[in-house]
Structures are given as structure tokens and as C-alpha cells.
Amino acid sequence: MTALTDTQELLGTRLAAVVAAFAMTEDEQALLAGEALEALAIDGAGAALSAADTPSMRLTLDVVVWRWVEARAALGFDFSADGGSYQRSQLAKQAAEMRRKAEDRAAAAGLSAFEWPAVVFEKPVNADLSDEWQDNAGIYQW
Image (cartoon, helix red, strand yellow):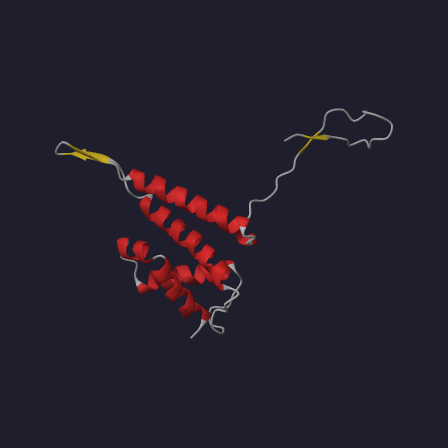
């Protein structure tokens, strides 16, 4: 067994409902498993997935699969026909929410591939605030 086959098996069991609902092919599962392995910098052709990597892989698979679902659901559109109203965009909204939750859980677990970057910007206000300040003094505004 390789890390790729272990990851595919984990995907098939952990996200079985999504695999069934979208009739995910073996090739699509292999592609998503490979993307998850890449996010964790694990060689898919290498040895079997270690027990230490499994919790991180679960979180990563959640993110990767929900991103895939969101991309597929984005192609749906709302329409009305024969007195009925069909809201296909609802699936895209729900998939986006599940993806956000999965990314938040992965970031909270410390997986660097899903952490939000800290954005710090400097807003110069007055270079002459005091003699102790440098000429390029600024205030950080949050």
C-alpha cells in the first residue's frame, strides 16, 4: 500500500456520502487524494500513510473535497419550470459554508497550508511625532 491508496481509501470512507452523491469516479478520487497529499507535503508513491499523519489527512481531505464540491455546484443555476422553482444555487452556498468550516478546522489544527496570512499594514501619520521616533514612523491600525 502507498500513501495515495491509503488516502483514497480514507476519502471513500470518510466522505462516502459526497462520493456517492456526486458519483465521484476513481480518477477524481485519486486526483483529490493527490491534492491532499501535496498540501501536507507527503509523497503519494511513498510508504503507507502513517498513523501520525492520519488526523491531518482527515482535515485536509475535508477541505479538498469541499472545494471540489463547491466548484461543481457553482455550475448550477436557479430556474422555474412548470410552476416549480428550482434553487440549485443553494447547493453552492451550502458547499461554500462547508468548505469554510473545513478550512477553519484545518487552520485551527495548525495545518500551515490552510492558515490565513497575517496582514499588517503601516499607515504613516506624522513622521515627526517625537525626537525618539524614526523618520518613517507610522501607526498600525486594525
